[in-house]
Length: 126
Image 1 (cartoon, one colour):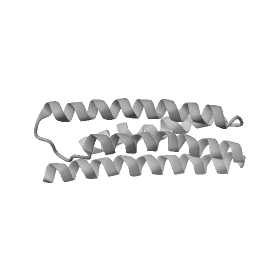
Image 2 (cartoon, helix red, strand yellow):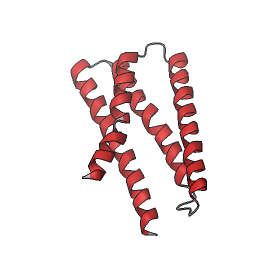
Image 3 (cartoon, one colour):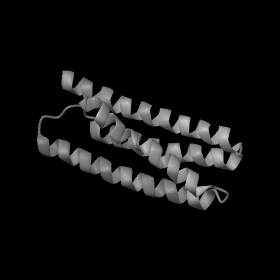
Image 4 (tube, rainbow, N blue to C red):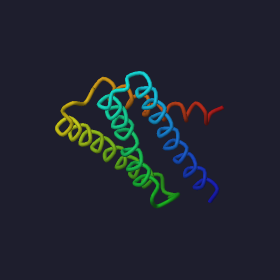
């Protein structure tokens, strides 16, 4: 039970850190550009990173801690495939539906928000 609780807390920390990084990056874009399209592009970049992470967490950890390693591995593989497909579909939706998007800001915000994975791993190992 303790290990399951730690996985849940670690997943929450990643999502919270992603949200914080996305919001901070969007605020920096608002302050520096004062342009609605760039601000919306930054917010979409954050959303494009957070939503697939939530999908991954839901699939990978929905059954809690499972003792058999093959089952755990299969859940994580399935979650990674869903995450990749969600990223792909969301990027296509943004590209097709938001013609005035600043794709540079969208992609930079996406990468900054996505970096929460690596930051949380470094933070966790300390």
